[in-house]
Length: 223
Image 1: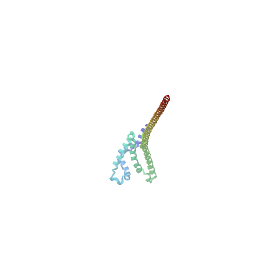
Image 2: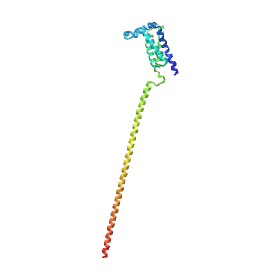
Image 3: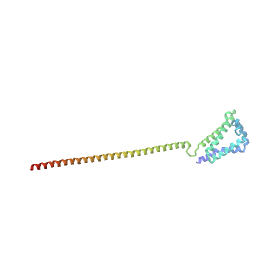
Image 4: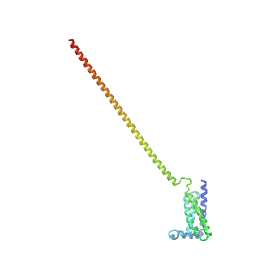
C-alpha cells in the first residue's frame, strides 16, 4: 500500500538521522549519555557494558539497522518494536521534565518528552500493523470456528449415516413382516383348499354309500 511506503520512511527518518549523528559524534553523545547510564545501568555495571562510547555505538547501530528495515519494509513490525525499545528508556530517563526545577528547562524537557511520546505512538501503530493481513487474534478465532464447523459437519454426517442405517433396517423389517404375512396367508389358503377337498371327498363317499344301499334294497325287493 502506498500509504505504508510513505509513512514508514517518515517514521524511521529521525532514528536513522539520530543513529548516524551518534556514530559521527560518539564522544559527545557518550558524555551526554553518562547521566542516563548512571540511572539505567548503575549498580549493574559489572553485568552490563558500561562504557558510554560502546553503548552509544550499540544504540546507534540498532537505530540505523531497525530504521533501515522499517524504511524498506523488511520485518516492519519487529523493527518497530526494536526502535520502541530504544526510545522508551531514553525518553523516560533522558527527558524527565518532572525533575527540573527551572520552568524554562522543564518546558524544554516536556516538549522533548511529548515528541518522543508521539514517536512511540507511531511505533506502536506500526508494530500492530499487519499490512492488510488478518491479525493473529482473527486467525485464531477463524481457526477455532473452522474446527467447530468441521466437527459439526462430521457429527451431521454421522447422524445422516445412522439415519440411513436405521431406514434400511426399517425397510428390511417391513419386508420381512410382509413376507411373513404372505407366507401365513398362503398357508391359510392351502389349509382351506385341503379342508374343502377333504369335505368334498367325504360327501362323495356318503353319496356312494347311499347309492349302494339303495341298489341293494331294490335287488332284494325283486327277489
